[in-house]
Image (cartoon, rainbow, N blue to C red; front, side):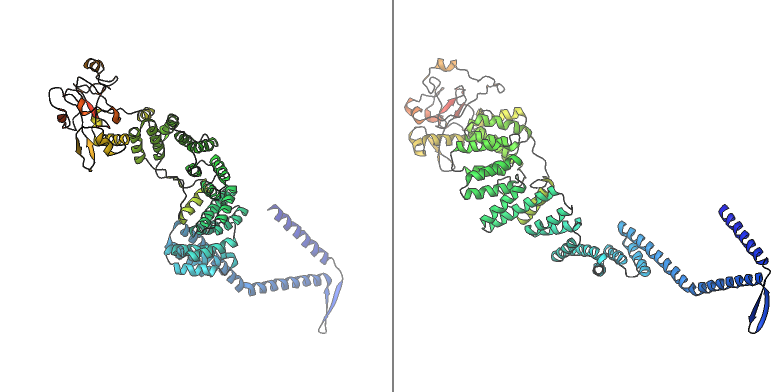
Length: 592
């Protein structure tokens, strides 16, 4: 305000000075116009000249403004139209974001009417058409966007999505590859090209897509390294299936250079070296892989190397393999297998017990069954075999030691290994629960058999099997004893119970010596009013069986023949002594 006042005062002073200067001029000027001579004061003449000039300037400016008025009006209208179009674009994008198809279509029409058929309006029109389910209109808008370089990439993305929804994989692949060539740093373009290559099993195309992605930092270098190793492994298995062993081995070893602990690559490379007679190289590959990624397939593959070798050599190989990663669970299982091969069943049981406390899988229970069976017999292994049959199977790919995948299986493995360095996604169910230490010790201990359990069909069948193994054949069994026989349901001959006279046991001991033996074993509680006597299944050699001539009458009368007709379901023989049929058909007192 003060500045303007100062300018006004200065202007007034200058104007007054100019007027005073002109008024002070005493001379006159003679002007002749069209023959007319006019004498005028010089100051007045100068003032008139200035006034006329000012009028001319003002008139010219007014005329210019009048002539420019239509253009200004038109520009104002265009500016208002542009503002309405931009506002419609903003509201249309907002409607697309919230999924309001009708509102988006309305604003797309408003934007198109005010802004024309521009790239942005095409994009809004296409997105609004997509929301409305009008794929034809959306496709035309996206195709029109391909004509302009600034909207080509957006149009390709829209067309890719349209082709994907329509199930046109070939068209989707073409749009994705074109978009990836335009913008290698676009994450969606890389993911699309990579996933489509995995889906059709084009492992080479998937590897080719990794290079630009790493260069443009679309994918982490570590993920790219793992993905390349998994892709090489899948390609190696494909080459092996086609019969090209040399290409398969080359690609498997390239995969191991990128990921030394990738089990499928290590198993394949080791198998090919084994087939070529290079066992030492194959074993080294398995050991290096086990050190980085302990997996059951590596143990299984190592055992295949020593299938025809002595068990001691295989056990030593397992021990060396376990030493490469001793803290791993698979290392402990390999140690247990080594103990079993060396018939050191006690060490195998001791190795497996802490593993079973943490988790009792089917494989763990199977190994414990093998160890317990070797230590205490098949009957002791049966509970562990039952647990193994009902336990959860290991869902890890290659848990059986083999990698037999379909194309979809390899694609899943590649994706899982690239993202999380796993061979597959997390299982739906958690790991199996462990067992109590007391339960493990109870199941791993030798099993005593009660009379009730001994008279079950399974135990009698096991006793018959023991007798057959001891005698060699059924004929030898029939000639070694004169005890009566009865036909079994399966057509074979089974031996019935024979009572032992109270006066003599099977070794010829007297009644006093027999009565001196305890009737019940220690730590066994009596069953109600009667004492529960424990018996064992025993295989009796043929030369130790008593002959029929030495049989004595049963207490209370009767003949040996009557003893053979006892009820097989009965727990006791006449005379009050519990007995159990052993493998030779002879009854055995429980206190023996």
